Length: 64
Image 1 (cartoon, rainbow, N blue to C red):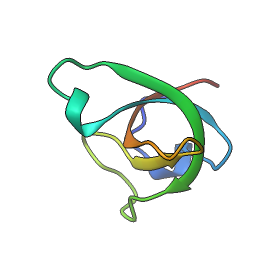
Image 2 (tube, rainbow, N blue to C red):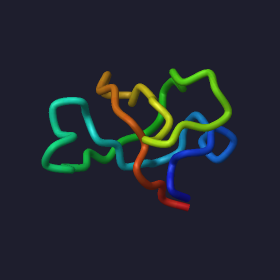
Image 3 (cartoon, one colour):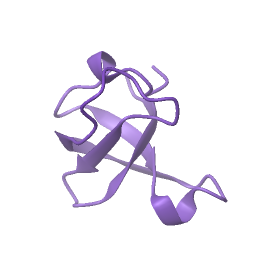
Image 4 (cartoon, rainbow, N blue to C red):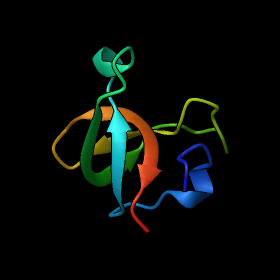
């Protein structure tokens, strides 16, 4: 899963996200999805989510 399709992401899924301040470096943060913030069915840069830790970022890859 590459994180660009909203239907691939579920609440409680373990994912890697890139935070806004880490977009240049591409540093990934691991966490569990608490909320899905993107309303559109897909987004080219990744679906924006909030992790249980409160971190907001775009999903780059998920752990199946």
